[in-house]
Image (cartoon, rainbow, N blue to C red; front, side, top):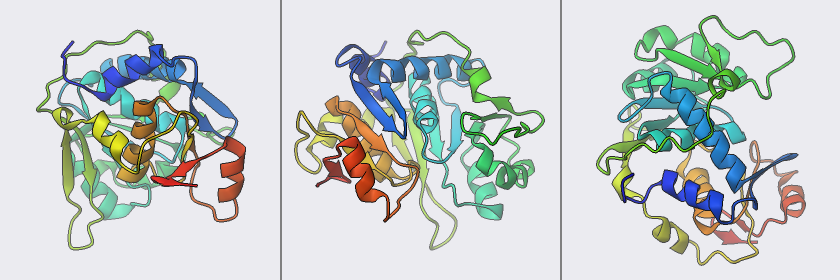
Length: 264
């Protein structure tokens, strides 16, 4: 495997140390670093079976759920690139991003099925749709031709050990498009800097619990909370969305100490 520092290598390291300590706190679920890594490896092997590999794009349009992060980290294990999609997009705006990003696989959630089925004909590059039914409504019918994430993840949990090209894109994150069509901002594997992230917002302490209720498709939640927590080996608490009435309840429930770099 390449010596280039990557999220994949960082997750593998954290699966060993601190390993069985909590990493992701979501409602009543607690995922350790090791369990998260096993789920990510299973997703990576499953996506590889759909043709995902180096240079292949995977669009992710999901609410804030642990499976969002599983899908994202799985792309990083494969040398692919992830495309976080704004969950508020519909119609032409959604079709444009899915077509423009040149992704081959889309990972989504039942609550976005209607918006997606209305535009997928206009994004012919998407050849596989994988839907996470972990929190699907009872009796929800999986659209014809779609695969469930559980089926895709029926795969080995060993590290796929794909060599990473440092110059290859690892993500394309789209701007809001306020002055025209959204612009795809390309992140590359070789630009990953875990130590630099840890310096943002001051040092993370040994008893810190990071929190985000911001959308994972945004760099703040993904990098300033999730990846910083992973880099520091500390737990993070994830909420589905911001709620003024539940914010402080979440802080007390999870023992949160920091939110978007600010110490509480």
